[in-house]
Image (cartoon, rainbow, N blue to C red):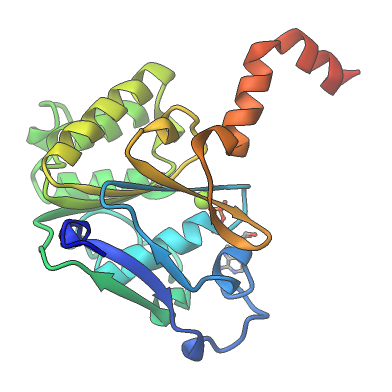
Length: 243
Ligand SMILES: Nc1ncnc2c1ncn2[C@@H]1O[C@H](COP(=O)(O)OP(=O)(O)O)[C@@H](O)[C@H]1O
Ligand SMILES: [Mg+2]
C-alpha cells in the first residue's frame, strides 16, 4: 500500500473469526458476514449493494458502532436510543484506521432519521439546517439540509440507503455535495440501491452475493443492468413481466 492510500480514515474492516460464537445464527450466518475476511475500503467512496435482506444494514451498523457512532444514527455525540439493541457483529470486527484523524462524521439510518432529527433539534442546533425545523421539512429535504449544513468535511460518513427520500434530481445534487466533501478529505461508506448514486466515478462497489462481498464494476451491477434494461424498453419489459 502506498502512503497516499493510507490518507483515508478507515482502511480495512476485518472479521475476527475467532470471536464468532457460531456461523449458524444471525448475524454471522448472513453471506455478507460468513464469508468476510478483510474488506478493503476505498479512500473516497465504498458502495455496498445487494438484495433486500442480504445484510447491508447489519454490516454498516456494525462498522458504524465499532467506529463509535450511536447505532441508531447521528454523530459520535449522539447517545439516545429508542430501539432494540443492535447486533453483536461489531464485537467481532476490527477496524484498521489510517493515520489521519477524522474531524467530522455521521451515520445515517434511513429508518431512524426522524429520531436523529429530533435529537439534532434537542441539541439546539436546528437553526443551522436551512433556518427551518427539520421536522417541518420533508424527509428528503431534511436529510439534504443535514448533508448540506451539518456535514463539514474531513469526515467519515456512513449512509444507509440515503436515496430513500431523494428524488432523482436530489440524488444528482447529492453526488455534487459528496464530490465537494470528498474534495475536503472525506470518506463515504454507502449502502444503496440507487444506480444514480453508485455511478460516482472514484469508488469501489461491493455487491453481496451467495459468496459474500464481491467487487463489481458499475456496469455489471444488478442495479445498473436491471434499470438499463427496463428504461431501455419499458413496454417490452412490462409485457414480459405481466404476460
Ligand atoms: N435482530 C435480528 N435477528 C434475526 N435476523 C435479523 C435481525 N435483524 C435483521 N435480520 C435478518 O438479517 C437479514 C439481513 O438484514 P439487513 O442487514 O437489514 O439487510 P439489508 O439491509 O441488506 O436489506 C434479513 O434477512 C433480516 O431479516
Ligand atoms: Mg438495509
